[in-house]
Image (cartoon, rainbow, N blue to C red):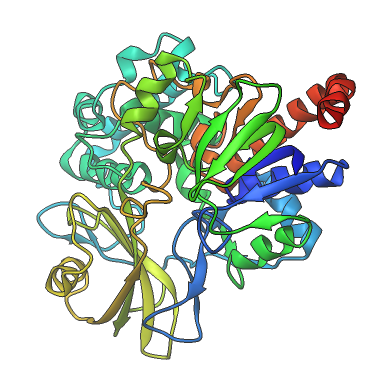
Length: 440
């Protein structure tokens, strides 16, 4: 059977592309390698607190920064709620804990003000529509730790920035790109606070509700279909899945994570410059853990120099038990080591009892090979926008290749809009050719 478009990958970018093309009247097939849809938006029942839905991947949104996601939520009547409000602070940013909301001491305020000016100045060099490789930004594509050290901050301010950088970038500061940190700032209306405050709302009943609502609007979906080859050497594009089954279409939209593209055989090959980044993969190793504890205060937030750079409240389990969210990276921490988990939590909260931990290791998952996108140093100042550009009849979408909202559900939806528009435009001009090909 020949389709007009085959969509590879059932995260939010693939779901939206398949749905919108089907609504436009196209015959569309969505191929998803796993046995579920949603991609790195993955809500399920907690393994330590049965009955509670928890998010293993992307969970946060802000309606001002994420209008496409807000529109989808409103369209399907999916309810959200405010993210946990932080009211109890247990930071470890120096020799002693600093229990206040904004922990930087007055003695560091002037240096911090200057550092904020420098970061905003550098972020304003970025036009989020152009791609990082097209703006002479190589001088900023340096280790985040080096960039922070050059800011001349005091010790508390420095650790505060490094900790939040580790959280957002999904890599330790020496491995992460300062340019990518500044890209986050640029993407949030050139606001440092905007990056953190974008963690504003969460899905009330888990992201799976929106995933299932969108899936119902897609006529044909195949799960467990791992794509191994895409061949556009003939008039129609042939898509091969594991096991050897082939499908044909006029266009293909690749909506799987960027780090899995190296497992797909493209014929003809993608441009060499692009292949070098795809083969290496981006460097994100973020590890999000949901830690079940007893005795923690509601609204707790911890930032500091531990192996968990951030640890904060997620939701209540019982009157005396809560789920906390910890961020680190899978290269720095073993989530199967229960003693290491207890030590990392007790670094901030020595009084609590650790009941259990829940997580999904996206880096170890062969269908993802990484969490949200975080480039290696030097990658995206060399190749960035090109990663998301079409190659013949193949279009590339997803939050990994979003310029304006990288790593967010909004970015997945934004790139989907672009690809759908391009496919429909090409389809309108080639309909006669397609009709003849099918008839033959």
